[in-house]
Amino acid sequence: MLTHLQIRDFVIVDRLELDFQSGMSVITGETGAGKSIVIDALGLVLGERADTSVISPTSEQAEVIGSFDLMLAHDAQRWLAEEELAENDECHIRRVISTQGRSKAWINGRPVTLLQLKALGDRLVDIHGQHEHQSLLQRTLQRELLDAYAGNGELRAQVATIAHSWGRVRDELDALERSDADRAARRDLLAYQIRELEELALNDGELAELEAEHGRLANAEGLLSACGRAQEMLFEADEQNIVSALNQTLHSLEPYSALHPLLQETYGLLSDCAIQVQEAVRNLRDTVSHIELDPERLNWIDERLAKISELSRKHRIKAEALPGLLENLLTEQQGLNQADSRRSELHRELEQASAAYREAALALRDSRRRSAVELAAAVSDYMQGLAMSGGQFDIALEPINEGTPSPQGWDQVEFLVSANPGQPLRPLNKVASGGELSRISLAVQVVTTRNALIPTLIFDEVDVGIGGSVAETVGALMRQLGDSRQILCITHLPQVAAQGHHHYAVSKRIDGNSTRTAIRLLADDERVQELARMMGGAEITAQTQAHAREMMERWQ
Image (cartoon, rainbow, N blue to C red; front, side):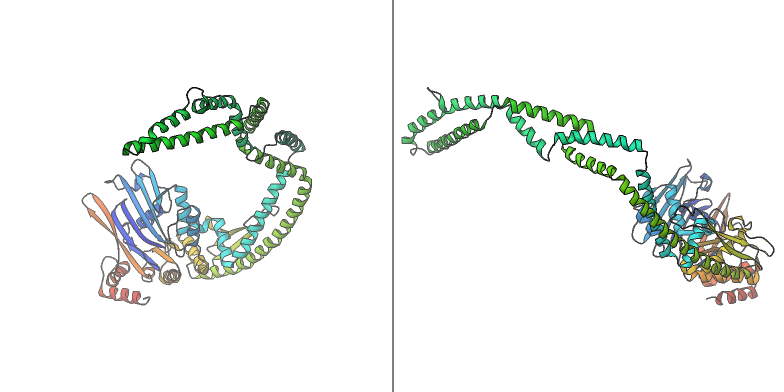
């Protein structure tokens, strides 16, 4: 539901902020005052295309911001969640058009494309009266509307699920039924690659162990030499070594170490040092005892590491991933070897899915046919009171693609109408009169209102060419719709305007060479004056005012 609309520098509107409520809201004003500006501005936030002509001559850009309550807009909520644009139960849309011809849009503060804006707009508001705006003219939505009226939600979901399962099986079967030459070539390549990897027989963790062992063996001679020199300097030198020097030093200082604090500390440090040096000597001996000189083992590791590196480059993966690659290739090879068995299994699954789909699709078709008759009769009845006496509404169902399961079923749905007696039924989008189309749309919406798909409806030109009791009927139907959905109606008929739950008036002000439009919500007394103006023209009499008040109070 539209809750707030903010317009800046749009055509002849400087700044305008409007709050909207649920129910039926009417917009009235003198001819040329700019009643359609609200609809045009709203079209911007709904994703309609626009050019620089919508920008006020005194501004660099036009800006429109629309806020929506999504409590009843379930389809819009799902779309926002899928696009990761959801923000609680509200939605804020901003659109800016600059004089350079640039268009920018945001949904809940995040930049979006015009296509995204249009997709969301189609789920929030349905504008009736302009052919290019009206969702009722789209055959896919006609089918959805019929299914919603028929309560086919579960059946539609079942048909879609089976169709997707059929498609998955068909895709897998197509993949298996590639040419024999292709499969044979792939099988030969797999056999060669598997043989190489099996001969390598690289285990998980083995590479790290090989690299560590290679490092030890490759540096064994240098390590032995370094350890030998260290042992000689520390302990084995005949004339002088570090251990002997430390022991002699400690022996010389021991008698005097207690005579001076600093000397005592020095003696302790040297004593600790002697202990650590002796420990280091033991570690060196242990290290030397474990060092191996094995050139043959080193050569074997070099060759193995080279083979591992060669295969990792060939397959363009890290060496650590080679064992996992072997598992994947073995799985693929097994799949190719079992292709014939799997193909037979898939054929059985495809036949089962086709049979299940046929049963569900035909059940959906039967439900659509029954509901199409009911819906067409109900809409035709309403048309009789909407200045289309003798008019007829019908719904055509045509089978499509019965060989291929479709998520929507096997039926094409099209709304047909004959607005006058003797005229043939024609597709709804071929109806010439905008007023007739709007009234037919109104009748369809009233009949299907319990299964509303879009929460906000806007009717423009709905009262073109009618008056009197027909106008009152049109107003009553829109008010009835307003009990469950938000209705915005631009009208020039007092019989329609009097029935609105809320009434907005558009006025035009000429100031020198500039023209500005303003819109405001009317209080009850102001509504009486506006209705009287619509009834009586420029001169408003007391009798006209009394008639206007009586007309308004009848619907309050």
